[in-house]
Image (cartoon, rainbow, N blue to C red):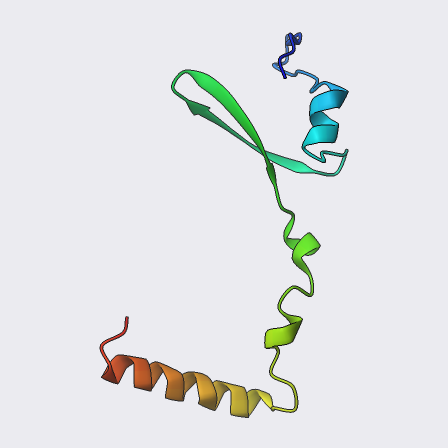
Length: 85
């Protein structure tokens, strides 16, 4: 998909609707813009809030904060004793 776009005096350009739809961009979506080999690369960026709930299966339910911290310390100690950094 190739399009010619105008760049304003403020350095702004509009992304054509076909590209926005193909990449699921909407007015609240963020993008990563970078230069690679003298070209501009624009990639969609996941919003952290869109990831809410993806780790619900890994949640430690029925444990107090104190128990969770103890588990972390024990895990770190075990990893240290095995030479895992």
